Structures are given as structure tokens and as C-alpha cells.
Image (cartoon, rainbow, N blue to C red; front, top):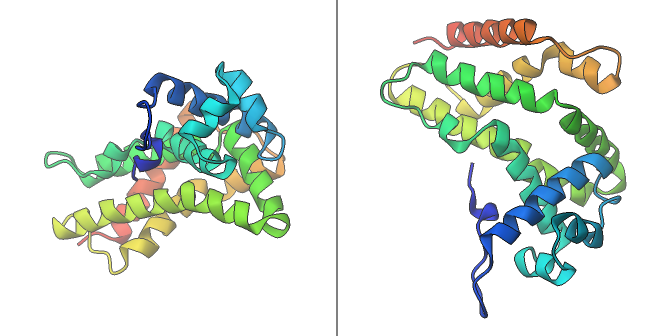
Length: 212
């Protein structure tokens, strides 16, 4: 995943204050996750961050840009870009376990579940916003996973014909039926022990399916 969206943009005038940018981003994540896109105004985000609305616009040109940055940042909290770089001394199982745990925690959090429900509803009402969310979050994660699997292929750790498809398979297995039941509100999240067992089972299945 890229962190380009999270970096201050260059331009004329005084350099942007990284601390203010971070405060705006954190405020945006909280409000977007709690109140959704339509329920989070730029005025409210500015107040939450303790800055002026002009400062918000100086760092993020519009609400859509800020939303995309907030979604990307939320994903990177649970799935840092370094997770998707296969270290020379690390096994593929170790890398997949770290990604699986991070993704499992991300998609099953209350904030992510609420955002997922909102984006499904927006798919028919505001497809542009739904696409923005997909590109900033899920699509970036899938592309990062594809990159990791291509590294595993190159080193002979796995044998995968289509890393892009395999990346989607992995995340779908991690979500499983449990995430669907959570989205519907008919079950409770797995406890830590059960969640770890689920992730380990998926990693074992995935590695066995694509072993050289």
C-alpha cells in the first residue's frame, strides 16, 4: 500500500504543519466511522481536530480526498505496509499470519462493520462514494497482498498462477461466514482464542493449496 495520500501535499506558500494534518486525519477517521460520510461535515471535522476549516482544506482539497485518506489510514493501522514486504529470514507462514490477524481485526471491528454497511447502502445511492471507499481501502489491501504473493512466487515459497485472485481468496477465507453474520448483527465477534485459531486454520489451508 502507498502512503502518498498521507503525506503533506506540496504547493506554494508556507509548508504544511504535519501535526495539524495528523490531527485532521485522526478526527476524520473518528467522525467518518461514527457518523458516516454524509453525517460528517468539514466544519465538524475541523472542530474535532481543533483547527479552522480553512486549515482542513489547505491539507485536503475536498471532503472526498479526506475520506479516501481516512479510509487508507484506517487500513494501515491494522495492516502496515511492512506486513506486505517478505523479509529474507521470514517464512511465508509468519507473514500470512501477521496479515491474517491484522485483517481479521480490521474487518470485524465495530467501526469497519458500520462503514461496510454504509458503503453497501451507498452503492446504489452514491456509487461514486462507494467506489472511492473501495479504491482507498479494499483495493489497496488486495494489491498489497498481490505484491507479497508475487514475492513468495519469486522465491519459490508458493506456486500461484494468479496472485491477484489468490489475494482475494485469502481475504475471503479470513472473513468467512463469521464476518457476514456480524454484518447482519446476528452473532458476536470471536474471542481472542477462537480468532487466532481461525486465522491459523486459514493460513494452513492457503499454504497447503499453493505449496510448490
